[in-house]
Length: 135
Image (cartoon, helix red, strand yellow):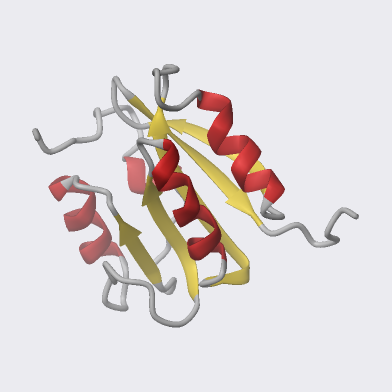
């Protein structure tokens, strides 16, 4: 598998994701050496590749329906005011539709907040825990 690398745009991806130095971050299944390097340089705290405790920001890549279960796991490690960035395919495939990610996240109590371009094949969508959960 070829490692993914974010496409260069006017603003670096780490800035578009809103990641700041004081945040505790985790990266799950994202295989971009450039992004991992940027995170390491930006964050004052070590960036985790496994979920232990609570995080301000979690970057999670999903490619198949089987990966969607990781959204609930990631949410359980997210601080109440944190952000979960889900990197997912732009186009529908035989295995997963673009809407599957959103439906899974919303069903798990998250709301989508922002979307940014990642690569030619993937988009990153930010999900957050709402201030007032919908009933």
